[in-house]
Length: 51
Image (tube, rainbow, N blue to C red; front, side, top):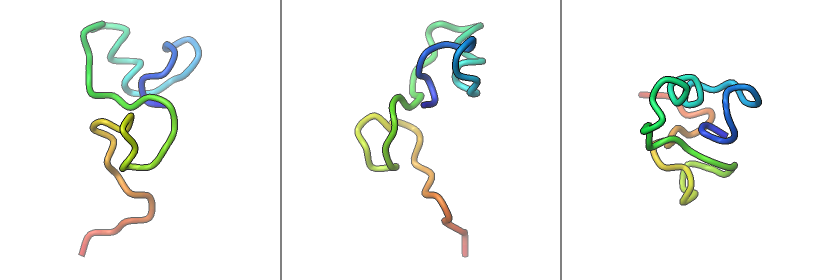
C-alpha cells in the first residue's frame, strides 16, 4: 500500500514524499509480506522484536 494511488486517496509516508518529489522510488505497492516481490524496501516483519 505504501506508494499505491496518490495522497488524496491513500495517506502514507511514501505518498506524502511523492507529492514533493515524483522521482521517489523504493516504496512498496499492493499487499503481501516482507518476501513479496513488490515489497521493495518494506522488509519489516509484523510482531518481530530485537534481542
